[in-house]
Amino acid sequence: MIPDTYEQWRHYITITCGIPLTDAYIEERLRALRSPRDAMTARFRELYGQRQLDRTIRWFEQAKAEGGPE
Image (cartoon, rainbow, N blue to C red):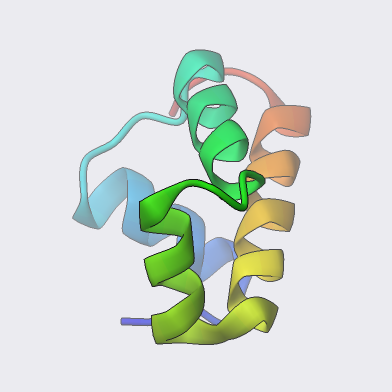
C-alpha cells in the first residue's frame, strides 16, 4: 500500500504496522530519510520515487509537529 494522504500514512504506520509515532522514532526516520547516503532511503527512492520520499518526509514532520505517540 502506498498512501496518498497523511491520514492513510498515519493509519498504516500506527495501526497496520503497530508503530507508535514517538519523538525518538520520528527523529530517527527523518535523519535517515534526509540522508542521501542511507541505503534504505536510496532504495525507497528507487522503488517509490522522489515525490513519495518528499511526501513521507513531510508526513513525519507533520507527525512531529502534532507531538506525542499514538
